[in-house]
Image 1: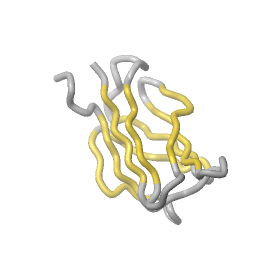
Image 2: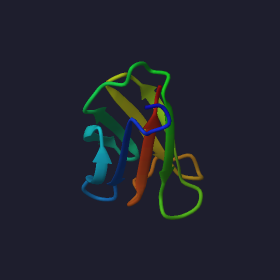
Image 3: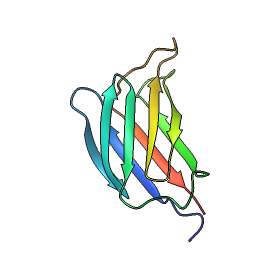
Image 4: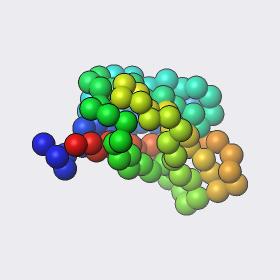
Length: 97
């Protein structure tokens, strides 16, 4: 149904990347500092989905979408100075029709 997250993940990216809990997320690849590719278990219907995200346990850290595909999503965790940063608390939810 519309209005329900089609996928979400809560993961720790500080040190060894680990998924704490998730729905419709098959895996996460650590591509380097603050650079993650999230592979969906089931594809999205299109690439026009909405990504809601939060990163870090301190102010000044945000996530942004680099590449949205039907089967995966690449995001970056960026600090206030503009550099990529790994954080203990990463949260992403995807909504689609």
